[in-house]
Length: 329
Image (cartoon, rainbow, N blue to C red; front, top):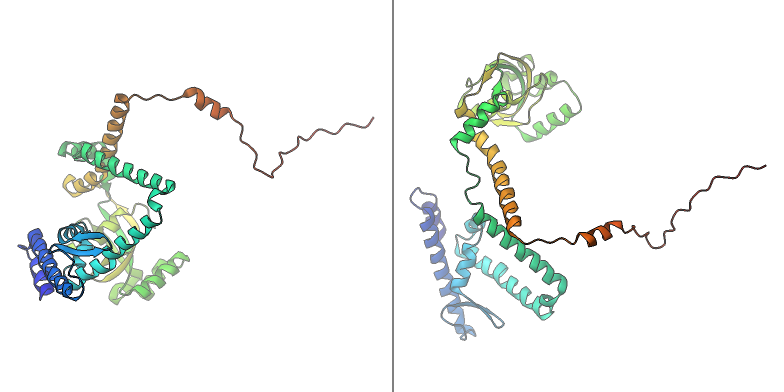
């Protein structure tokens, strides 16, 4: 009963995050009741809120709930049932603690190499947390940024008004693989289209004639995008999927030119500019942080190390200098 109800509410417009929380709490309550029932068979020592004890380490119901909450979304979806939650307890939480305790008994927590790795990981986590805080919002792109880039790079958004294309279209992956293999061997695009295309698309080697931007129906938007992204005659696209099946497109000709409207390329520009702006903000932040820090480099030591000759490997004799032979008198 838990799973169907959870699914209905989770995927309804009203369900949302609160419903997930209630589902988790319900499952945890069920689990705690189940485990408390086990206390009567040799587990009387467990406390009321103590979910599990591994040797001398106790994990409370609240701690277990926190572990569940930390799981990624895909993991949480698997936990929306008592069985999934129980599996998580027995096959992840308990084994992790058991193995951790064994590692400590072996003294691995005092091993210098391991401690160095732990310190490196700790530094990375702290630096990432610092940068998340310091650079929050730095990747936001304004409308002015988008418009400026659009005006300064209009050649990037200029494309043919019409393109004449030919395509191969099949409706199964095994056939698609066969076609791709033959194309990679240099076999004729037209002949493959005439042989493998479904329905009337076999006619004239898959020739579709000229198409214009916006001419195709919405389900074929990806097909249109792929066709207009081809820049040179004879260029072949990646595989594109539509309601008809799998397509491979070849551009035959182009005519006219048109600048794509800003509203059609706005999100593409934003996607391109965001990482660039974040990188700029990062470099600026690091530069300012270095200026504020007291940094001393031992240039003398550095120079001495650079001057040191590379020592030959053991067992490898240095090459003897070849002397010119003396001429016989």
